[in-house]
Length: 449
Ligand code: TRP
Image 1 (spheres, rainbow, N blue to C red):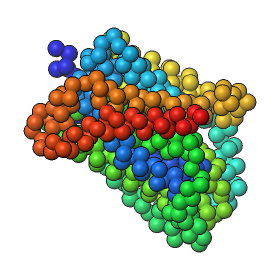
Image 2: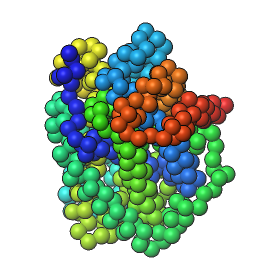
Image 3: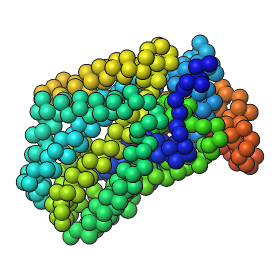
Image 4: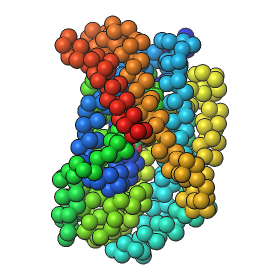
């Protein structure tokens, strides 16, 4: 029986760290602050929180239920319950989305690596935002170094995935995730005490609802999915490694809480500084790479803090990247019967290539546009704003309408060993069957028209 050899998480803490490690990553510390900046501040955050509680939690339960029930990769999981059906598109979306996301994620991971190295140079930290902006564009728009860094980041992540699920990342995450928290907290405190920080706090707290459009709603939904690693079988895959006894509710709540906490804290670390230093909040992906070094420059032992911060950001990015890679690797090994090594190499080649295009699209290939977007923006937009919401929609529909209600209950209660009030279960099923699908559809349709 193949299942006996299947790898899995070692302990409850291991599951939590791995799921939180998947969720907390560049999405919180790099993407969230600039999405908030691009989409008008507080109003975006409120929408975001609303989506996390109302939609993302039920989707997370759903993905866990599918994964743990079937003990399979995302594609195999759907195949076990609904063979030869249109539902298999969930499995296809998971592999495609994973490749799309990694094709820009790995590039940003490479930027993080470069910034660790930069932090060692004594004249890197300065409070001159123009100079930092030039440094960033000079680097990210060049041809060789960013591609090399992307491949290095991908190699580091791939090496961990080769080693398997249990050995390695759990151990390191236990130490590094708390360290990341302390550092971001310190940064937020420094940022909030800068002269002129008040403007940034106002930006984060006072919503201007006139800024909300169909596009903003989709952006908030996409960001929520992205940050919680939802909508593309990542949690299905991790769920398949979770022990039968674990309480899926608890794991979901704790991961979502940790992830949201990190995002808000990152906002508090970045936005006050953005306003204090007169940087434009809407400048996109370069935002944290320009603002944070400015804060470091104004702190004692700035260089050391800078090295530590980008190093830990790297770890957060890697623990997320491995969860994305694992989706593809689990599919290749279980469905296409490759060995784990071969699967990792094939995945590496595909993402290495696409990622190179997305890196070059920052500079030499910036004029090549598909649907009016560069490769980098296209991979980002296609995954967060199309594949994840559609994938999330299909997942809740699948659990709500295709799976047996008794099986869902059995998973959520771990075979009846965890108490779950009947009314609560009915409520959750109502959300999964009706509310979540309708809400996601409205947001998707609203942005199209
Ligand atoms: N959530 C991670 C972050 O915030 C990125 C990530 C990992 C992801 N796995 C995912 C995003 C699955 C979407 C789907 O950085």
